[in-house]
Amino acid sequence: MAAAVSRRHRGRAGRETISFYLFVSPWLIGFLVLGVFPLVLGLTTSFTNYDGFNLDHLKFVGFGNYVRALTTDNNVMFSAGRTVLYTFIRVPLGLVFGVALALMLNQALPFRSGFRTLSYLPHVIPIVATAWVWKIFADQNYGLLNGLISVVRPNTGIRWLVDYPTAILIALTLWADVGSSMVIFLAGLQGVPNELKEASRIDGAGWWQVFRAVTLPLLTPVIFFELILGIIGSLQVLVAPMLLAPSASMGAMPPRDNYFFLVHVYQEVFVNQLFGYGTALLWLLFLVVVILSLLVFRSARYWVYYEVDPEAAKP
Image (cartoon, rainbow, N blue to C red; front, side, top):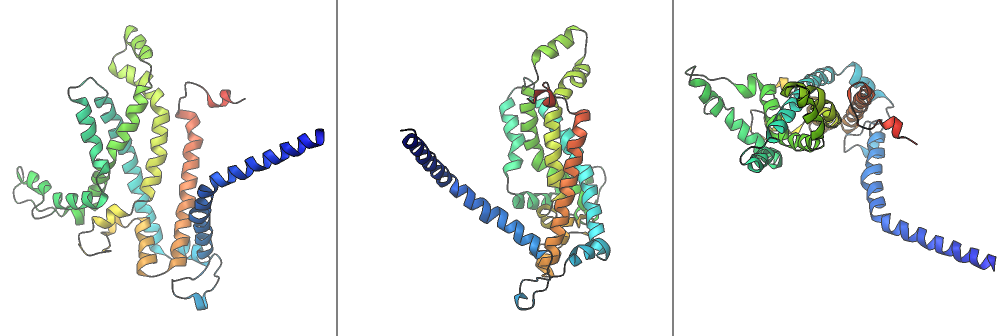
């Protein structure tokens, strides 16, 4: 009797296991085909001299592509430096403007919902349309920016897209992305208990003291989240600087100031047809992103405040 019950139990468990794998098989197949396989193929390609057409004389070059990137390719260090500089400027500005906009739109303002919608709208506009609008806005001859400056300084003809391309890029990305940050910071502000703010005001704290001692510490988990996303996104900037290139031709290279790391990867892969070398550059970027993310996670214990200590909550 016990043996029959055990067989039925094993048979039921086997059917449940088969059903489980059948249900998850679409995701599992997609993960293997679209996730694991491209990663393995890309890592393998980075150790070869593959150029897209040399399958008949494909060679394994070991760490040759990585050595070249770190020693002989001067454009790697230059583009990495420009990317890091852009990141150090863009990310803090994005956090500041996102928090400021969220604080403003968290007040009881007339037409507040409309202002929130208008603030988020640039984030859903396609980047191609956004870039073309900003190219017209910053045009040397008939751009609105030079037109406004001409009011106080006649005959202004600043070549913004040539002489100050990084400034225009930062302004474009802030305009396009600050609405998304605003929504996330608004959600964080909704989680700040009003009781704590009221208690601070009763104790005589002003607006700034309440923000600095109550609101900002409770907002640090959201700032931490936005900081990670901002670093990862800024290190991978590619489409915006390419579209802001003064030339209108397809695949035009941006000015030297906007020659970021992924722009160099684009140049090596799609212009020079060096797929192996390009994938090696991408894996170097992946390592940099991982290292910076780990450093930010490591630093979080010193400045991110949680109402419940994650370590104390562990069983």
